[in-house]
Length: 441
Image (tube, rainbow, N blue to C red; front, side, top):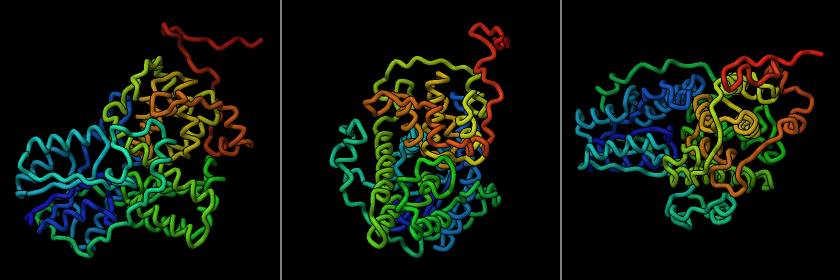
């Protein structure tokens, strides 16, 4: 039995169905439950955006407040510290003679560098990294990750009939906390305002799980999923899945119960279909590593694009010549959320109409989205840009056609003030000379 274990929460902010917390509780006499607010999250990256914007920070604060409350019910406390996670955890290991460090497996390059740094610094320590963010454990997959199928269709055909493990039964009490550490936890979590219709935390996630599957919405999912606005047009689980407030396995088992007790149709299957897309992106990101952020993507294609600062800013602020794109970007900036259809439209515009480097768009999404997930976000942008795991070589959406199909009466554009103020995309040419508007005849 290990005297002191440290559980490093990251994108597994829940108590239910948490294999990391269960493993630590079975093997340690006392636990440090830690969440690190990485100081890098507030600093712009090389792609002109911060890793975390205000909407997601609010959602994260709500999530951590609830995680703290859920741990307290089981005799534990959440320690929240700001700074460099490697430095924070190294200090705790030394101060409290930590014998083992536990975390959920992560696909993020920076998160894995931090993990490897700690392992190198403390070679005699036990480090456990367990899968908690995916439907399947690696050993359940019918192929090695080195032989991951090159397309989603091939992946789906091989995995969709695999039985998903039932959610873990968690202990009602956890090993005790270190009391004097709780007092050091930084008072950074003032109760924040709710972001749009989303409220962060395990309690809100599980409440939404029951509300959604107590309604008829799942039976209509496929016919509503492409709508641009509205709470009921999609499942809305993505934000809670992204930070692990709800277990994807628990979600699937609740879906299966709905199919048994209520109805099973094409729409309920499509919910599982979309979760398999999420699953595919997770395993793709596991195999790609840093290639997930490379301009040429998986195959290191030669991508021709430039960085036009004016075009980039117009896209970010919803001031392009395209009303639908403007409305979608203003919705994103205000709420931290955008429909899946909307994300494809604005990404296609960024890459094809504006001819910008797709990575800058992906980074802006990372900053703005409350449901940011590194694998799904960067994987989807690669997919649209034609540099990902996709044989078709990219997606180019006709914006006029998308507008006619999904906003035929212009209601969405009016609601989010997407009206065009200038039809001119650029105000200067390549030599920085002003571009004058055409003379009126």
